[in-house]
Image 1 (cartoon, one colour):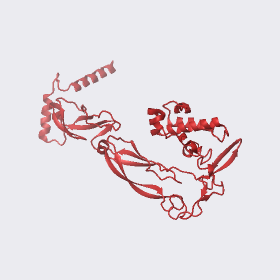
Image 2 (cartoon, rainbow, N blue to C red):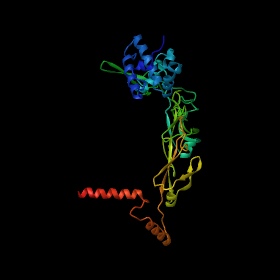
Image 3 (cartoon, rainbow, N blue to C red):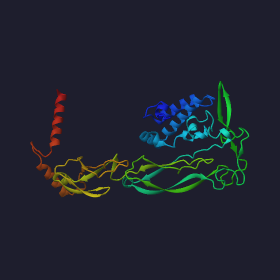
Image 4 (cartoon, rainbow, N blue to C red):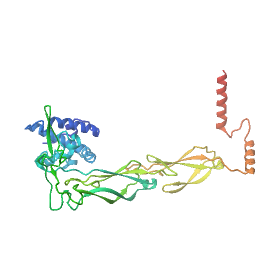
Length: 380
């Protein structure tokens, strides 16, 4: 029998957000949960189906594979693939949606097995230069993390001993409370849902099953990353508990400000100062790019603020696409610290440009005409 479309199972659109997926799954799980529908095979099947759909669509990588290839793209990843485990294998996904509503240990509470906790995800803020972000690099990072205790092999109990069943919940990990006509399970307050307690804790980890260490990782930064981009290192987060899988490490990019360039998407921008003479007569000047120096040709009569585009001298996008451009904005620089002779030359130059029909300052002429018209309109 062919499987139904996962989006159809949850009753959401293909562009549904993570919050919408979670809301839809919670509604279906509440409706078809086995504790509320005992001995109802139809509800049990619908519960499994919703769980499988949410497990795939709530994972970005699995969802992308499903969107592209359908069920074939996630073959073996769906929760119903482990059907022989019944409901004991979905603790993590169910707990992430419902917390303690149906008990903190839907997987480990049944059959008296220990709760399995996935390790926490970690985040590392990596500062890097614009050059490294554009060209790509490989860096080493050192971070604190929890790893499995080798002395007790993660059990938390002293070598030669082992955890024992919790006397409060009888090793189930949950206690049941009656609220109105609902019978609600909650995590056992004594063992916190694990179903076990440690009478003789390990001296190395003090019963935690994990110890804190520092580890060094090599992180490959792809060319073109931008501020806020993240790299996921699977399994490099904190160690899980009771044999649970480790979390992931997310390395977040923080690109430091550059003294010359600013970046917008895949384009770079910079300001280039030029002299009055170069602006008036034209010329060439050397400008920097992230790939080397180039000559920029300045045409005669260039005005301050004029922008020139150097095609292909920007950033190559990290996800593919054309390379951006470098935009150079020229700023005409007013000379300072002039000598008396230089000042006199400038005054002579200014006198030579005066005249009723002077063509040398077109913007100035049009501006004064606009001011004149403005005053005349006020008088009228």
